[in-house]
Length: 614
Image (cartoon, rainbow, N blue to C red):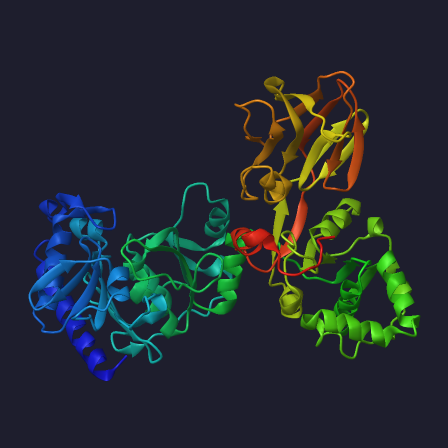
């Protein structure tokens, strides 16, 4: 921020705080101060005392010749210049070339803790944050450069300047160094039915709820609180100054996934906030909030596609990395024998060169590969794997095929060597940084629901879906579908899909089914090209039992589970589907996995190269 703007903003902030404080004192503790006036621009009730405070803010800004933008709790987004007060949409103002562009943007909550002030509970104050408007760039929380907060009840004054530090009553702030959850003082707000937050609260030594996000978040910077969270979603105007104060003090503030806060500066924006006095404590809190079951990785299994050299050679690079990291490895036996064959192949160097030329993203990784490993000494059948993690190199087909052969619930880490790779976690270029983090325990376990399929005396499982279809081309089947012993539909169709949420982005989606977040407890029933106008996909509880019968005599069918299991179905055969007791575990490096994958992988069919998805 330019010095003249910084000096001006600081002068204005102090003037606003002083005048609001002086006026507010006349109204504190008075019942009439809480009289309802309207619903504010942020969607919350506005009291008389709030209007009093905000009017002073506007009057102060309006007394200057400069043009300013203001985002305030009650009135919303304003442009103030030369006695003109204009309601605006900030994003429109930033996009257009205005004749009097605002130099400074003020985000002000004139009175945070309104109820406390009315009841004379000593936790209420004002927050002023300042950002500089820049041409053609919408401002975010990262653009806030000055923050000022005053607790009107006790006079404590917090302020911070980006890159310079944070101070409480003129003295440098020092956040807490406490790292044990059982010793912390935790402030904040949770949501109903948030079990992970309950676990955190139950473990913490004490919990405080003072009713002022502005003040309580600032307390993390000064060490008054060891940590603070607002899982409801704080308004940006409440945290704009506090966030800067926390960061400049040396404490840590992120969302509940441990990601930095960079929300747009808008009256409509909210953000879930987690702040901690130090990095170690913060990581532990984030793990609890995400129900992270990460454990130390000691033994790792490696599985790969074995029908192309790209995956085989890259698997060797992964093996070398793990061995050099002191990790015990198990190599799936087919891969181990393929690597042994390649080790003895006189044309190996030419194979590596040809693979590098076809896959330039692999070139650096395939340099100086060492074939001095006795691969078969590490090999086991996949069904015998017992380890802390299985790395699978390939596409979704490889992952589904490998997972179906595993008899233990071992967390899976997928490296995409195929086309779409929706279930895989990482692309080639990010592999080794991700593995470094995982070996340090920086990962999340995601559990996915499976289907349990019962047909005659046999039992199968499927992570994605089961497809029932005719075994003859261009023939329709006649289905009866029951849910919890109630017939929900009879219809003729080319086929039927029973899908889990994981499978909702696969064949189910292509057949017109909805996309389900994996956290949704449901299954999808999707008729394929039904010959009945009113038949549409159903979503049913995953606690239900689904039964499917073939009703027309003489029609033969098959069902296919995850593209791996292929079974014949006869007239009046009943196939039953329930939620499996066993879940499939995936190792994730980010908790924002699903929707990012939907956006990245399902655009233009997810095609990013010419390889298939085996």
